[in-house]
Length: 375
Image (cartoon, rainbow, N blue to C red; front, side, top):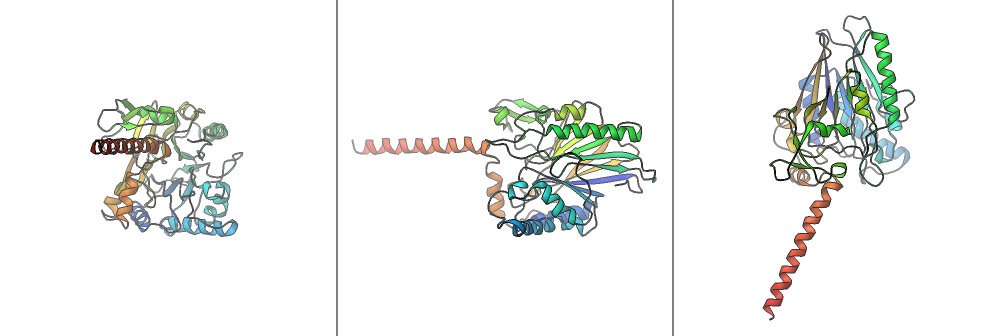
């Protein structure tokens, strides 16, 4: 990749399309409108491109692979038909379809036009790579760098796997190689699917009774949060960060040399914010898929623009369905219901408990009324 003639480099992050073979026309409308309006130099897909769980993808072997490939081809067509380069990493749901990330990467994505990024040496699977952005003068100098990390999948027994320590080792080696080649650490941004544990450090813990407080689960069970002071007033926070079950030190590694400016994730579909912890910006990007829960017409994509003259800074904003396409969706009833359903099993449990308690209370009340009527 190279900075354009104006010394700019524009990235579009698309995350959590989580689509099925019958791709939502609203998903495609959003992606078409966003790509046409922004004309990015590179598109980065940060996981859960497909809804790998459930029964929507049928068959085995080549039949299954063909079904997944057809969906992915449809989803990426707004980018590939415009000859825009793209890079891809994976979420927790992609491999659940029954095809490994390695096979999806090599057999599906790499066969599409302008797929860039070679899998990191020594790291199994797919979706971990470095993408240098070179100077516009043709010197070959790496002015900026993008890292894509495969952040893992669901953990056995619930929650999410710890971040792979081997990727941390690879990143440390790669940043030193870039430093040696370019005469100093190269400013970089990380893209991955699952947020780091430190995302809670850009939030503010509040009382349950405070308006807008969001309940957290698992490692932050029964704690309540709102956006912290480093976030913008326009940012959106509607569900707790679904972090890994344990901290293997990713943030510590990313923050120790000052080369990493920001980390952008997806995973929690309704969140769209950027906050700062220590010397790193931690950002969420909302989902863009309409066949899974999301923040209704606030589904969207994120834009990040790098200036070659000032690569240690960047600009970012989101583009949403309502501003690019409009307020009407193809399945309004499904869209409304899915926006109200619990986002995770952890979030569903207290709702089920409340429902059971309400039913029990109603049953007791009916029993008392019957007893009184028969007395």
